[in-house]
Length: 175
Image (cartoon, rainbow, N blue to C red; front, top):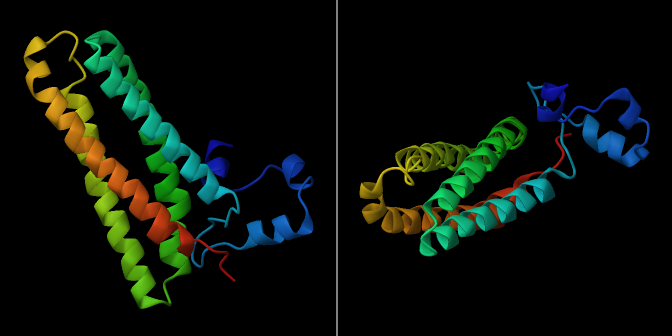
C-alpha cells in the first residue's frame, strides 16, 4: 500500500469515486514504468515546499531565540519532511518526467540536470542536519551554525523557486 502511494496507484475503493477524466489522467503512465500521472502531484509538492520553508524558518527563529533544544526539534521535523518530500519527488516526479520526456532531448536533459542537482543539494542538506544534530549538546557548533543555516536556506529557496517556475510546468500526462 505504501508503494502504491509512491507510484500514484489508487486502491479499488478510492478509484471508483473519481470522475472518468481523473481515472483517464491517472491511467497515463510514463513509458517504461508503472508510475502514473497524478493531477494533484504538483500542488502537493508545492504545499510541501511551503511546509519545508516554514519549518526551516522555525529553525532560525528558535536559534535566534537561543533555544538550542527547540532548534534541534525543528531540525528533526525538517529532516523528516525533507526526506519524505525528496522520496516522493524522486520517485513520482523525476522518474516519471524522465521517462515521459525521453523523446524530447532538451526537456529530458533539463529534467536530468535538475534531478542530478537535487541529489547533490539533498546530500548537502542532510550533511548539514547531521553536523548540527547535537547542537544543543555541543556549544562549539553554535559558532558556525548561523552562517551554515543561512547558506543552506539560500540554496533551498532558490531551488524551490527554480523547480516551481521551470520544472513543474513540464509535468503533464503521458499519452
